[in-house]
Image 1 (cartoon, helix red, strand yellow):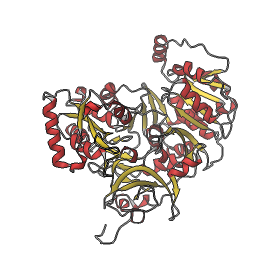
Image 2 (spheres, helix red, strand yellow):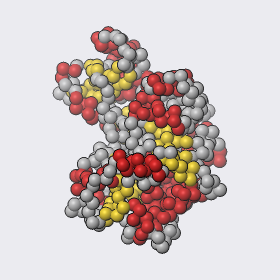
Image 3 (cartoon, helix red, strand yellow):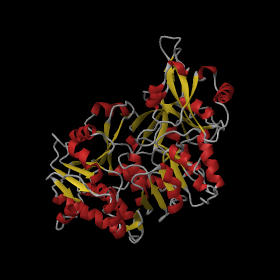
Image 4 (cartoon, helix red, strand yellow):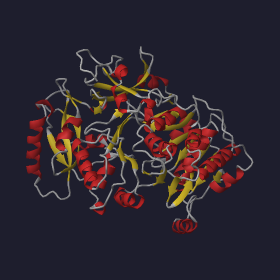
Length: 576
């Protein structure tokens, strides 16, 4: 960008487009269903492997046939355009068939975390008014309880073994006998598919207003909401990531470790790779301790995970002296990663011959998971990347429509084709986050604070609700402190939360939770002295933590993010 004294605004200048091939500027989004886009993208490559499930390879041809058969089975079961089916499962080939098949028939898949209680699942069924519930047999008992006094008429049950090979299927069934007592309204997968013979396999006409899925999020206000995402969102995301063509190549492997009930899991873990001809290696229930073993076994070029995954890999003794030159795009999203942790992972990747640093991204459920990416050579330490081509990211005065010049800190807002259709039956909450500005664009007000540099790289500071506001009004961004503490050689992880200011009626102060490396032989008092000195050198006085508390591990949410609320709940007056 040319040097000028005039303020430069990202929405107009879009400096990040200098990094992309001109052909990716102003790309029209495919006007087709998500399934049709996968078919288009893989025409002529039908023998390529689409899915790998415990060693069973499923080609694109087989995937397409199975999706069409599943669509016919849904029609035979009475599913119609506009229906919302609730699905409670981990990732399996059947759930992927159902994702595309429900889209084909014009229905919506309401994806629910199987770890929820029967009461929680009940609430999501009630909200959607589902007539059909889909669940894995492992979760049938709680799902059966959840369906009482609901609109559910039929329950489709499938086993993790449906797509397994002969010997493995027999071994799984012998080791895991199904002892559920099923109600009369249950259909089993084979029965369901057989009933679809003769039903139509045609797709409903493409409808840009149709919702493929509903996924649930706390959003910027914290209350649970169903996010409606359409074909356009999924297709645009896949199309934009194709701009990283040096990194993404047909028939590479992607290790799918994220759950299906979050946008990140489906958009980046399934539809994106399938649209680019990549093989999705399905890991339905990841044990983090086994991640290194899985990486060595499958040699994936890609993985979309959270910071905790990569910190586990970097510390895994099984990977010591192993060649990881096949790793091209191990991407970190879902949560911020501190500078110290990023450096640890990057040093690990470089020492194991990986050609690129840790990839990163930033987004939210409301934009189908990703708005920026830092992958391949387009990367900088501390950044969450460049806006994807076709997506506009800019910084605004928090809570307003006043755009700030590049370089200034404020609320990160996002506009583009991946933006959600809205929150299900929550127009008031939709209006809070989706706002049409005077420029005619619809912007997502993220509730996150950050800034953009002159090249277009976005830097994330904190969620607005994570900001710690002192009694004097000064704002403290936890990431500022975490970036300093994480550089200490003894620190394996850290998180900063707010605690009550004992000396003032209002306001909060920062307290640091710290996890030490296993080989640390220093006394904790010495480490605290060193951390105090580091923070005093690198941070303003008003930002300094009032306490340092050592814990064995950071609590995580079900999808692997640091559970800041759980940490705040642990704070006691004796900690500072």
